[in-house]
Amino acid sequence: MPYLSLWHGRSHPDEELNHWGEVGPMLGPFPFFHMTYGCEIKFSADDRHVLNIVCGMVHYDGRFYGDWSFVDTLDEGMRCRLIPFDPTKAKVPQSIAD
Image 1: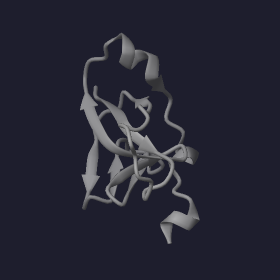
Image 2 (image 1 turned 90 degrees about the vertical axis):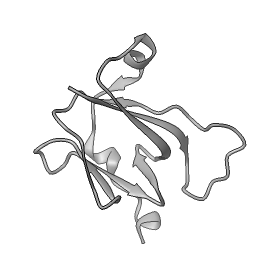
Image 3 (image 1 turned 180 degrees about the vertical axis):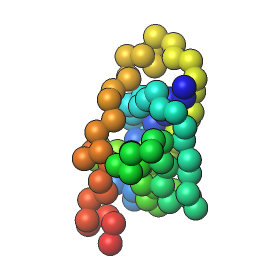
Image 4 (image 1 turned 120 degrees about the vertical axis):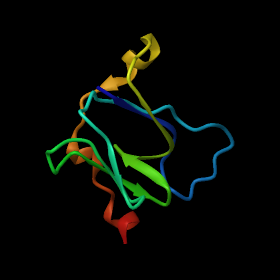
């Protein structure tokens, strides 16, 4: 089953980076990933398993990630980043969502 790896994180979609940004978490494994009209990624039959795409970036845990990868095999570095998905951390702040 696949995992989702988040990369190039920043604290706000408008933040200009002078570097590659933060390496984010590894989420999964999940039975599938499905992207809808470039605005969200769903990855389970549970309606709460959704990541929103804001300004072309995935939002999770207060960060906005400009890159993401789907992988099916984890190396040691990826395993160290593996965390359980928390739907409350996927909510986009109201100030950004408006």
